[in-house]
Length: 209
Image (cartoon, rainbow, N blue to C red):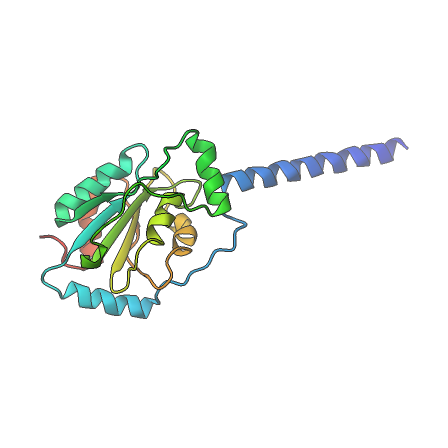
């Protein structure tokens, strides 16, 4: 009898641990159970477009960024200065109250929060950099709203993230979920503005004005 009770206690303890671990992982990676898709352009199609845009003498560039603490804004501004690009801030209409919980809920539910402003002349750009912090190993939901709000046909979209530890690869599943028929190219984590020069060289797009 005592042996059965001990076994039952062990089973209950194991079950509680499993539930706690699963709950922690769901909180830490809120997008892990979503059905995410990737319908972006193929590598071959993207390379063909990259080559065509690189050959253009007069390239129109936009740096769109979402920044909560200001870190991504700083990188976006430096990138704009080095490439002669226009700047656009991706900003939700409603400010975050409890950003810790609200951002997690948005990512978990695949939310698309409304933005406070739009790019009026998106048609003119050849290259659109899209910058953001890494939230919960994913893209912040306002970035997904931005990507789904415009026709990016004929444009290269170049994502960059700012993070002290997480790499941009962790965010690609949620980003690509919003990239139907979009050419995604050259994504990079930029930890400091000093990394921008090397990144621009690697992109091989002749972007320095």
